[in-house]
Image (tube, rainbow, N blue to C red; front, top):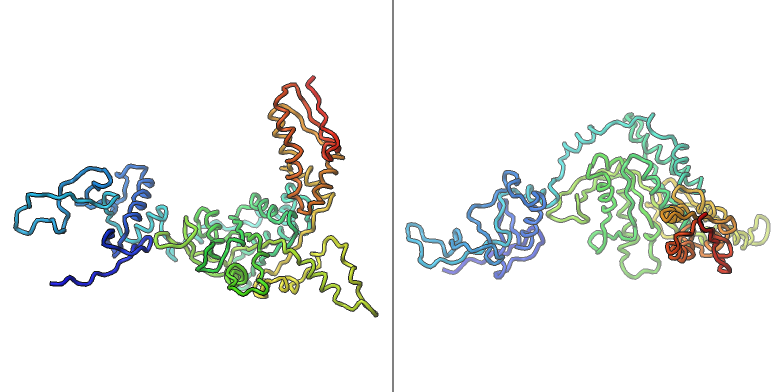
Length: 493
C-alpha cells in the first residue's frame, strides 16, 4: 500500500521546514521543534536549575523512554526505538540483533504545555492576563503630592549638573511635575491630558544630558531610545514598539510601574521626511506615523527579555496613555527655515525687513514655530502630539567656562580626581579656562568639544607625572593650552 503523502511541518521555534535528513521532535500540545531549538531550550533549563535537574518543576520531567544520544557521546543504549520499525511486534519475540537508538541531542523530551515552554524560554515567566495587570495597577502605591519635588526644586537639582539652559530646565521641571499630578489625579470627571515635549537645540547644548540627569532625580522608570535605529515594521532594524520595551526593562519588567514612566526619544530630527525620495521611506515618515498612537496612548504588545517578537518569548500588553514622551533633536538647517520666514516681507517700503537682519543672531531657534518644524520634514499629526516645544540656546564662551568649573561632575574635577590618586594636585589658571573655551567655540560642537581639547593637552601630563614621585602640583597655563609653553611643575616640600 502506498504511503500517504507526508505532511510538511515547520519548527515552532525558528520556523525551519522539516526534512527527511533532519526529522523534528514532536512535543505535546501540537508543537514540533528542530534539534537546534531543542538544544537551546535544554541549555536554558540547565541555567534555570543551575545544572541540578532535580530542581525541575512538575510537568517538566523527561519521558522515561528517551535515552541519551550516542552521537553526542553520552553513552550507548541498546534499546529499540519505542513505536519504531525496530520495535518487537506484539506477542512476538524480541529480535536478536538490537540496534542503537539515537535520541535528540538534548537527551530527553519535556512533558509541558506550549505556555510552559514559552515561559521557560522567556526567562521563567509568562505574560500577565488582563485581570493580573489590573490587580498590579491597583497594588501600586498611590502618589503622595507632598513627597513630589516642586518644579523649582527639580530645576535646582538639574542646575547642580547642567549649566545654563534655564528656560529648558523650567519647561522640563513643570512637565515632570504635571506628570506626577496626572498620575495622582483620581477625579474621573476632569481627565488631565499629558503634555509631551519636543526639545530643540544645537549639538552639545545638553538635551540628552538634561534627561539623563533627570533619570537620577526621579523615582519613575525612564528609558532613553535612539530614533535612528527605528524602522517600519517588517524591515531590518528596531520596531517602533522597542522604545516601550526599553521602558519595561527599566521598570524590571513591571508593567504597572512602566505605565507611569517617561520615554526620551533622541535624534528625533532624523525621522524627517526625505525630500525628493524615490524609494519607500521606511526610517523616516513611516516611523513618525507609527509613533502617533504611542504618543497619544495605545495598548501595545512588547516582548519581555528580548528585542524582537517571536513565538518563544512572552508578550506583555503596555498601555502608553500615562507614559510621558520627551523627544529631542538638533534639527540642523532649521535656522535657515526660521530666517526665511522672518525675512519674507519686502525689503522696500513701510514695515520692510532687511534680509541680513538675523545673520548675526546666535539664538534663532527661540523664534521657532510649528510651521518651521513642518517645513523641516515632520508631519503635522506628529507635531500636534508634542504640544510643548522648548528650545535650548547654543553654548556661549561664558557658558563653556562654567561647564568646565561648576557642575558636580565637571571634566576638570574628573582629572583632578585622577591625579589625586597619584598624590598630585591639578590647578588651572583663569586664563587657561578662557583659552579652552575659545578653542571649543571654534569647533562649533558645544560642550562636546571641551573633552576632546582637554584630552589632548592632558595626555602628556598623565603620561609623565607617574614617572617622578617628587612632583606635588601641576598648574595648567594659557601658554600650554595655546602651544607656546608648558605647564608649571611644583615639587613636594
